[in-house]
Image 1: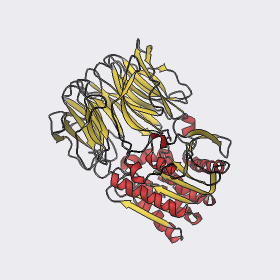
Image 2: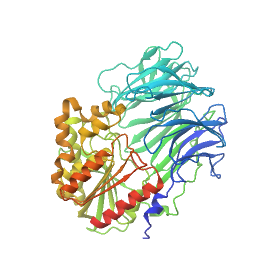
Image 3: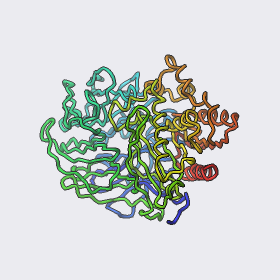
Image 4: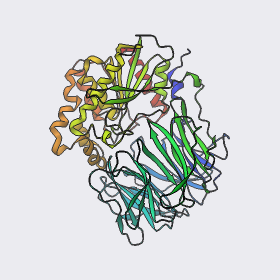
Length: 600
């Protein structure tokens, strides 16, 4: 089988985040052809796209005005996540800054019905909380409409533009929903509850009398429900089942809606139309879309069609437009694969292995086409979060290593999303190291696979996955040939002390608090167990990382080196929590490849 250099894989493009223009014909999307995601526009399927933004930094989102030929996009600087908002005309000729608060984050909250105003949440008043603002399309200043003492986001305007739906985040597992009356300033709390309950994907219903959302209230998995604005009554629309309803988009004019179930990591999409408050008729299930993850659903003006982003293990991200009634679809974008033949990409096998307590751990296992028995090195690639999920999406780094003869194991250890509420809590605070034990069990499972070389197994992961790498190397040092820590946590105490003020409370809900759990957090921090490490270590980080400060990389690299461990460290001065710029991705992952070639 032919092999290809790393730069080819890192030049595989991604088209995503679609938004229909006000006439329903033109479509904007983000694509990284220039090396970072920029706004592009199409007027028809597979036509030549027009690039609308030409920025050096990555664009995070773009949303068309409902009435005018213009859109608003968001962009930070150097990965610092302090997103600013900009207005862009539909031909890309004029960019108008809308926010001038470079030290603050701005979370987009949407246009009102005629595009004369927009809403957002921001921590510009106090870094640790997010207030709610409304700004006129032609105004230089925003109006503070709700002063918060917590983390609020705006999920949309009511159909009559008199109110905003808000979500308050207490932790990754606990949310609340409110409606803010813009005239009176009254905040109506719709979801008082005890314990941890998720409320997400909040959409206004057709008459403004209800919100439709996903929730796990009273259930282990998330389901689709109607939340009455006047009474706060919550009624199921799609009952809870074995798998989460993970996505929802409602068209408030027609009552048509789309929802997606996360089934073993794969999206199953349903298109429907309300016939009553909780009754509906199913319109279509677009089964022919590439198998993988479907997201970013957005209707056109009449809700006759909707656009989605689709990606799969062997499918790079592209935008498709789907007919709501029939489910027929057409691919609109043509994100390039850098000339790599699709048949060279490898599909994973969904497997389960038994952990220390008999629990079955789901994982994706990918094996190179020409793998030979007993001679195949393996990368155990551990997701972040921790409440995230490894899913079947296109990952160019994985496909490169598969092409070079490495197998990949991608476990969804306890604490991962997608398998019910109880599963996500199995690694909370004092149970943290049980999830690391799931990694050890995965390696033992690998050793029983005929194709695997048990002496060449690598731990790799980013963010919380970086902590998992370091913990696996220090807790089970004999298992590993090498470790790759990308923007990872080395010391939970210094991480919580130095992470962004707005994030600390939510991270403490997951990991434990500095006030109550400091001793435990110190005991499980890899930095304090570094004397156990034996495997060579590569550490990569962004200097502007607001989530996991770069000091985490510096201290683990320094202390490991003092222990005599072979260590390499690479820090990018213009990156944050991950690597967005093409030249940096090339340098970062080429360094990973060289490191593994040397040590594995």
